[in-house]
Amino acid sequence: MYRKFGKRMLDFSVAAIAIIVLSPFWMILIIVLCIAHRGKIFFFQQRPGKNERLFTIVKFKTMNDRRDVNGNLLPDMQRITKIGAFIRKCSLDELPNLWNVLVGNMSLVGPRPLLKEYLQLYNAEQKKRHDICGGITGLAQVNGRNAISWTEKFHFDNLYVEHLSFALDMKILFLTLQKIFRTETVNASENVTMEWFNGNN
Image 1 (cartoon, helix red, strand yellow):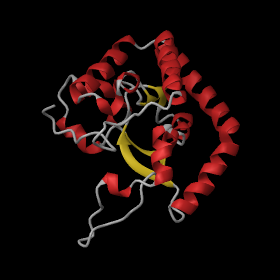
Image 2 (cartoon, rainbow, N blue to C red):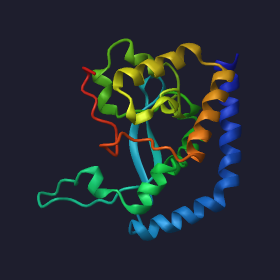
Image 3 (cartoon, helix red, strand yellow):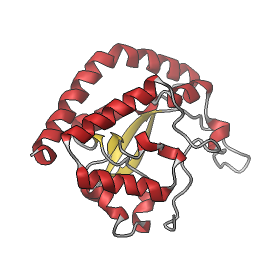
């Protein structure tokens, strides 16, 4: 019952309330990012959701668009701004994901939506992560996020899909808030983002 109906009702209710309550804070972030990133506030990207259906994920922009002499974007570590680093450390860059939850593209809890380029690289077991909506946070995120290997990440994602329940969602949300308030690092020490998945991890 919760998997089919309750989870969506919880997602919609919490997302709607959170967007309203946090709107003043959002405005402050928007103004700061507008100044820091020359008017570019949001980051948009196509990601696969439930049943591998593509949708546009929305996040606060944390990196500038600096490029090398050949027109290629510089490495992430050279493009992330000071305010962007702070926003990532506190996971505030993912606040706009609440809009994705509100419209039904995402859930509060679930496997984190990855790049669409990875779809053709998944094996049958890894594809199970798309049996449900992706989430803002998930079992992999509260167990290391970018600091764990792809094998571990997929293990946690599939474990969640198999054992999805209201109690598990509440536990993951609590652990997520705990990590945010403790401002624990969410990225691997040597990278701003997770290493590229090549299908062999």
